[in-house]
Amino acid sequence: MVETVYFEITTACPCSCRICHIPEFLRHGQPVTRSTPDVTLDLMILKERLSVENLVVSGGEPTLHPDLEEIITFAKKLGMNVAVISNCVKPETLKALSDKAKIWVSIDYYGERQDEWRGFKGLWRNYQSIADIANIRATLLKDNLEDVKKLIAEAASRGKEITVVPFKGASQNLAPTPKQLQQLLLYIFKQGYAKQAVIDAPSVRMFLLSKHPQLRAEAEKNGSLCAACQTIIRVNPEGYVKPCPFLDHTICRITDPEIKEKIAQTRQEILKTYTGKCKNCKYREICGGCRASQNTECFLN
Image (cartoon, rainbow, N blue to C red; front, side, top):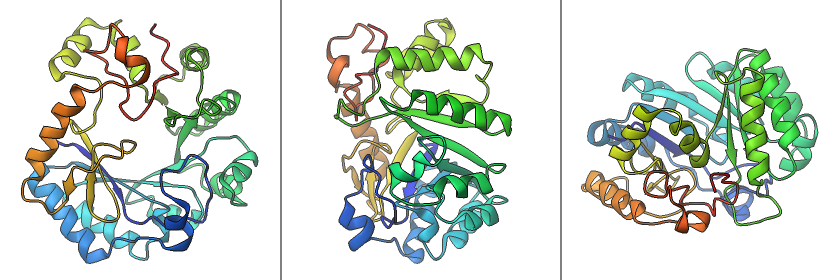
């Protein structure tokens, strides 16, 4: 059963993030926005055919969609738990939606350097204005370890959550090192932030599983720690289904009558695929790494 769908409702975004998977012309020049009638049909399909429980609305910048509140309301009527991931370009919109959806703000640097990194003035100030209702989603890069530590402390001090994802691209100038990932994990546990902070990385999950035999047995049963096409999928603004938020492989259209079978088939293909450091790793049958990454930050070997 697919539990969670990352649903990109538009490619439009005023920011200029170097790590964005959406081409610049689709963000600034010719954005693609999923119409509200199409989104409504999509959500019904996801609920009926895949029994989706959680909807994560993203983009692009989701707050630029004119009917974002209507979309969230309809998803909740279908019984879905809803979250929104935003760059925080429209903080008042996020604040108004916080009683209907869990709010996540993408932040990679502490302070105004965030504005420089994303190419949009006021993002840090915007986040500060709604910090009491906003959880944080951060990308771990080669040069922002100390910033991420501060963001973890910031979220924890306000009783909010933070998810940290190591950079997925091929650029070694941006990718964190294994030592940096270890340092971040140690920081979280030593400072007592384990309940608020999660590092979304296969190597971290594998390390933690090694301490819990029962969880490892469950992972072996599922075939891999990779959640793509197992419990999560992504739908882009053109209505194409992808394995996860990072892997840009088209499975089918969301309206495909065989969507469930094609997702399952792609899952089997993913289980037989390894990238980067995972190709020769002794843990690959259980862990598998991230198929959208070279996994250079992995510290298991």
